[in-house]
Image (cartoon, rainbow, N blue to C red; front, side, top):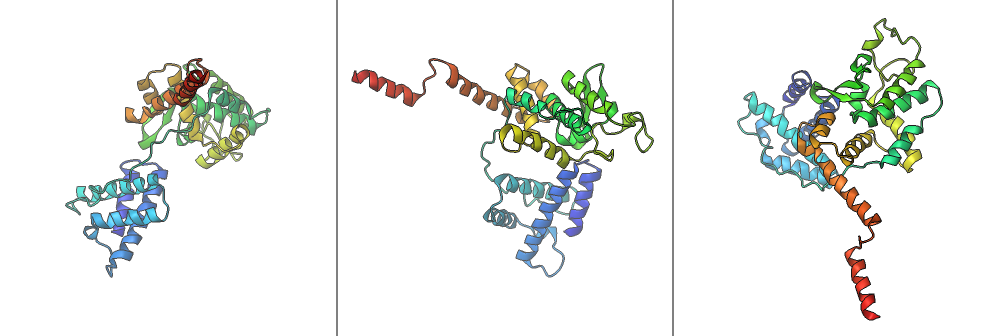
Length: 318
C-alpha cells in the first residue's frame, strides 16, 4: 500500500493540481493510517489495500478521537481515506471502497470569526510610516480585506495580475482555477505606495520584467510565504483585539460586510471562488446573528423573554 500512496499523491499533485498544503495534509493522514494498520494487522510484509476493512478505518478514527483530535481533523482524515481508496477502485486495485460507508463524525455548527467594520478599518491603519516594511504590511492588509482572497492567492499574486485601469486583480485559487475580482482604490493606493519604495521596480534581480514577479516580497526580493503573511496579520491584530487574528478572518469579514450591505450571495460566491453556494451561505447565518444582536441592543421594544416575564410580574405586584 505504501507504493499506492505515493502514486496517489503524485496524481493529486500532477493531474489534479492540488495545493501543496492539501498534499502535505493527505500525506500525513495516509502515513498515519498506514502505520496504524500495520500495527493492528501485523501482516509480516507490505500491507495490501484489500486487507483494509471499514471496521479498521472506524478503529483508526476512534483511536485518534481518544487522543483528543478535533472532529474537523477526523472528518478530514476520513475524506482523505475515501479519496485514496476511491482512486484504487478507479484504477482497478480494489472492487469496493472500504471507507465509503464509514460515517463521518458529527461536526458542531461553526460560524467564522468576523471583525466589525470599525475594527477592520482600524486594523488597516496600524501599519504606519513610510518605511518599506510598514508600507508593505499596509498593502497586504488592504488587499486581503478588499478582495477576500485566500492567503495562498495573495502570495501568488504578480504585477501583471493587477489591472489598475479597471480596478481588478486575477488570482489563482484552489486547483489552479483563476478568477478575477475587484481590487478597491485604497488597496491599489497602498500597493502603489509600497512599490514606490522598492528598489529596481522595473527589473527583478533575475532580470525578468517586474510584471512577472511577486507583488509582495521579502527583504531579499523573494515571494512571501503564507506563514509570513499570517505573522504579519497576527502582529497588527494583537493591537486591535489583544489576540491574534488569522488572515482568513479578513476573508470572512469581507464576505459578511458585503452581505450586510446588500450584495448578492451569488456574486459573493464568485468573488470568494467557492465551488458550492452552500459554502457561501454560512455568511447569511452570521449576518442574521449579528442583525439579531444589533436589534436586541438598540430596539426599544427588544425585550428578551425572561426580562419581559419579570417586568410583567413587577407590574402585577403593584
